[in-house]
Image (cartoon, rainbow over all chains, first blue to last red; front, side, top):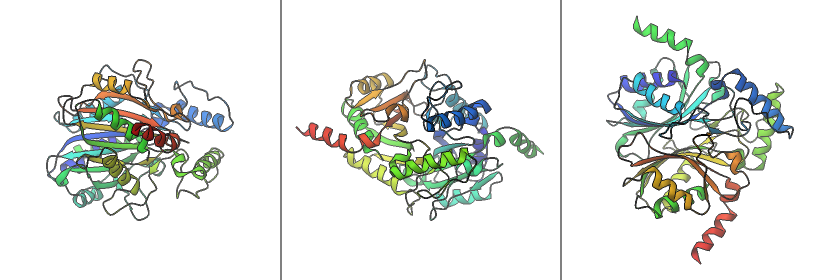
Length: 208
Length: 208
């Protein structure tokens, strides 16, 4: 999925603080658009059918997608991970240029039209407090921080659809790790824009 | 959310193997039903409106739910966790009768009518291999293992809707932990059934 999201997070979290990510646990919320226009059309068709009390048409996926969710449809490998998850594991190491980082992922399709979301748990090699992380993220190009706790406003797939920036929020110190070694964040990005053309441009700019 | 799920996982994972969970990272996929019948009706109404190109009616939630997802609507506390997440953290410790277990959670509402799902990453104090975990889960009452890698069939909210059993699948050794100390699993349960009356009966039976 959207290596654009990960590339930007990498840049901001890794390069602008002393702390390195040593382990990452990701759960995804992936939209129909990741499987192409026909999948988006099937989700719409199925939703109409289900609302009308009809059997849903299942051509692209082998089960009902409307008002449902399921493990990503990529083939499952002998280690129990599916190809999408292994892609996320391998691309993260490649993008971060770090073969030692530990990554696990669970990729799930949700009945959203476009833009993916990820719940990300990070473990660092040094303490990184929430305020420092937020400052770094706030200053990063290509990222927008949406993290309004009082009004419960955080990134959503709909909010980032057709936008260039990746949105990050729910930034908080991970209660399950002692000593500020962990953060939980929630990320949304429109992989149609961020995953392809725009990334190429932004990477090129970095090389200038 | 559904402490029924956690109670059953607790029983099978903790009591029937030597390994204890020492840390758990959870991301949830929570259905409209958790917010009551009116929320289910709003999701249906909004979906019809969006399909008809109309503005969605937002009475229960403060934003579009149809074909979207968002951070759980519970109030956010000063530590950045929302009340739903802290409930999950505290209930897990209580149900497991273990104040030392480390838990973090990110709770997300997805446009599913009923039955919640959870992506769960587990860390044990001793090695627990995937096959042993699967055997234990297979034998547990109140749980059904749906873990067919070849046909990509795993638990779904729709599959468990109106059913008593909690479904568990995607059981695999966590690649991000060395030495079989970790497992990733995916759980679905209809919290309307499992979270309330049925739990009371099953707990009573255990006491007999």
